[in-house]
Length: 172
Image (cartoon, rainbow, N blue to C red; front, side, top):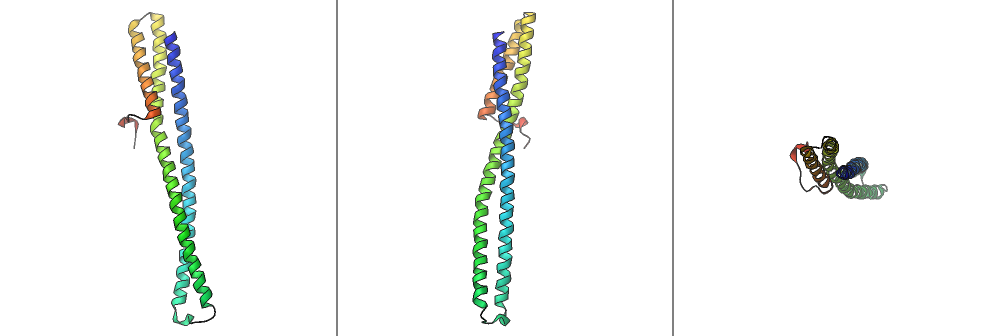
């Protein structure tokens, strides 16, 4: 009975780890999506400034534009558009770094989650097997439950630490 209680505690830890990994994965995905949307907004603004700059540069390159009083203002405006284009280009790089970092965090939590799932299965079966071993007074069933519990504990530990990556648990 004490062994079964220990299995239940490890099961609770595995369940908590799995729930946290899933929450962290979803949160990182949501934050990453928001960063990519922000990145896209910066790209759009960058392209708008580039188009406006190119338009002014083309206008200034025409011989008919001459040396009128508007020329210095147009040149200043073209310069301002070029600076804005550069600024948006620089800002989007930082946003991209943040988005990629969040994607990496999402991927780590996605990789952790299956270990907790399998740990829960092994530990639930271990609890049932342990109960059956008590009712049937079967040492074989007790050792079977112990083996499953050890597997469950190993999968739980691996869920937290990711020391070993089993290829069949990762579909990517």
